Length: 628
Image (cartoon, rainbow, N blue to C red; front, side):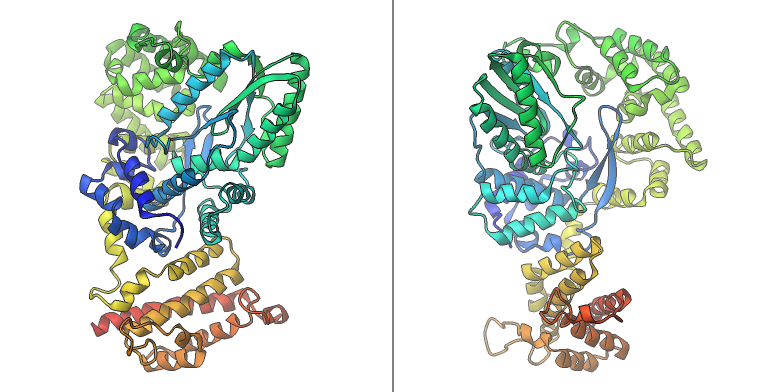
């Protein structure tokens, strides 16, 4: 169906599945992979899976796999970020798409180092290692350049223009065939609901945004800086959309103005919005205040940094006491400043690094009686202060190992839910508690079912079920007996793509386009089903390969005649006949475009035809099952 090969699938899926389970099970999107056995992992990365689901586009050929579930994550500043939950197979497809492009798209400038959430070259497909390399590079550049300019975008991912993205990909990968590019673009647009998909922690999508979309932005800046006689030397380093221009110059005042104009023009060309309040100039040696200090010292200077030398239970106790002293209307900045002050050290560690060290590497600190008492005093009176840190609050709660404290949190949650006072951040706490306890809490799962049934269904299908077996069974469940033509239909990438595009336009509420694709899908689908039912003329019996006569189902009179023989109701056949008529009038499918001249045609007419075609497919499967 496209240019992605089995070798690429095997390489990148295997790299991803090699990530430790204690990383994967921290996030809802990747949790389903943490439950897999080694046998499951080998099957998913193997040739049989690739052949049955990926190569032929079968992963796009079922409504279940095309479900889009809305979810929210909490950013470091407490704001919510809307993300899309996709099924595990689609998550892997995005990874491999990015990996495929990484093999054919090469860096165009020696003046830029860009990093994304992973590294396809080394096979490390999670963000920590690449962010570490980014931090090291930034510190290195800060030591050899006099100044830096920090670039910040507003809503980078929601504003990522797909047309510009694929214009860049066509330019950077001219040998990629247009069919594959069409599939890539439509797939991204579908799962992004019209925009670039925001999927938690996916290295493939991160690569595409970093290396493909922002390539034009980079080109414009590099060209302008190279031509600027005031700039003596420069280098750009970027982690996805967090970018720094390091430079030395003759006249700093002039350079500041020129660089701001250059960046502004590049952003305008790429249809990106700059966040001017967060952009700033600084001295190169001060870059340590922008990126994680300890990473640089550990990797470059060989300093063996140990948090234990700087932090203990006292820091946590002080933190909770200082948070308790804050007023009811404390702002995020005031709360964050309290964390920063509690975790200060000579190494300028970021407070989030230190906090994560407490939460995940040394949870026993929270069992200290003084720490525990301070925490529960704060949680009892000023739980709202953790509205910016819902995930971390739950992790601290669990780390206390206090059955009384955990029970109180759960009881308070049930009371709020019954009185319909469960806020957004409290909903995130519920979800985080479930993830942290492997969803082993029936009552909380009940709350999730009531509050977010789609999220509940995702967990039930992919986190609590062996979805590998379920996917395999679903692909072969329509007919228990093996049938030559049904098996061939499952591997027919044209059929799978037609179904996907029909659903694509259904989600966009574009009824004529949806109808055009579904009618083509219907014609091809029933050609396979007629052949499976051994209807005369549906395939060439005289040839060993039994080629299907697709033209057989293009003719309305033949289809209506065969459906009548099979006992299909006349009302359904009437709507099928109408579907053939509308197909030949649809401007998307036919040059006559008579629909434009028919002022009496209603949307309900098209919907009735779509329903009839879907019903006929179901009936033909029933006939086939009855015959076996």
